[in-house]
Image (cartoon, rainbow over all chains, first blue to last red; front, side, top):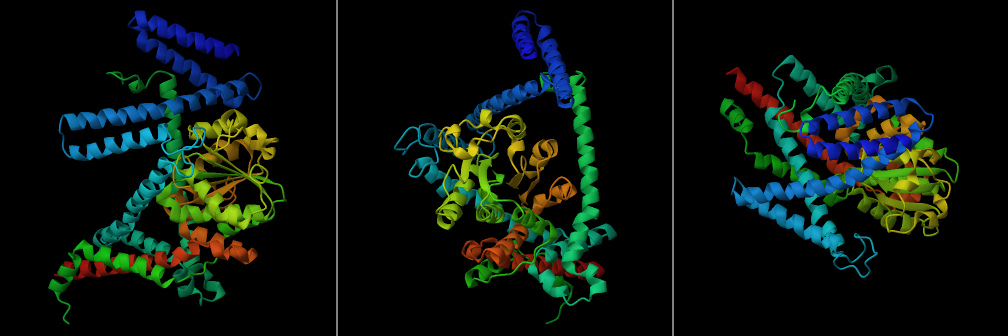
Length: 249
Length: 284
């Protein structure tokens, strides 16, 4: 509790001071980041109280803030598209559709239009929101995603060429994976005798995924993790300041 | 017919609408004809099935719906088959969603699988739908320390304390298993990183085919099994049907395997034709 009270006082104090003293507007956010960042790192490695409690409280704060990000996101979407409409930028007509759709869904959801009881969930049977979700949102999302099959086929026909040795290896691997993900893969090579089972297409497909693919994935994952650690450290120590906005970097 | 350079040139520049038409026919035809395919379970899928099969009755299993309508054909059969299997084993099923769109999908499972197939199972006693909460990885992190602080009500707004099956749930560690059906982030990967690894809780699940390659490095130590794409869902369905023939009427992935297979073959044919055309025109 002590740490939380301290953090809250620090936060309130910094906001108050930064309001009056301009140079502190950047100093206090950096100080807060340093304090909070170090505290959370320490909390992860020390299982004794008050650290687990602190971690719980921070997680709760994070979830509360995450809810507000919806408001921020919605507000930003409106601002960007209204500006586009006002300035009649390229394809501004589509922005009218976006804004209209956003406002309609928001109003219907917030006021639970069609709901018999105010305490009913927004997706309850008979609500306008449920109808819009089932009759508009679901088919739209499914349709857009389904288009992938058509574009993948078209792109594969035009661009998937064995132009180089690397491209040929990629092409062969793609063939094996594509056939291996279907029952045809099983049928095609099920006649192979036991000593040649490695060449059974599903086995080959599994090998590609679990050996060369896994090696690449692990390398990418380790690289990303190291990148996250270094960026986090730079932010905690105040080296990376682009998140402050303005010309700080 | 003479296959000269002009022919191959024309073929390589074919209007893409012809390709779209072929794909549309190859996908629609098997669906219209109602062709059913079989699926031979892969070891990763079999591991999910066998681990659930070994769970004692009353085991508490959390299943997170981390996807939306766009990936329903791949993800929904996985979730439906898992819930059917868990309830057949008399496990306690706790549904939730890290994605806002997941809430609707858990409702689908309740309406189409739980209620018709398990009329004797009682809401709040045998299964519960906690619904969606914002926060993503932050939510998983918070659930790790306290489930009830995040979920004070179920999806329909009823007090969480009023459900008997919630009485002994305090943190994620109280679950015997976590399953995530996901199509992106936050999803199965985040459940492994923020819950499974930290609490030593068995984690598995199902993901879309494109996401699967990201998950393979976690198998088998951090993730005990995986259903990858429609094929994985079909394999799991075939295992469930083999053990519980009643599930045959609910099979969905197995039905979709025929269109996927024919479409894959059509894409392979396109790539082969495209390459032949490329080499024939390059020679001159």
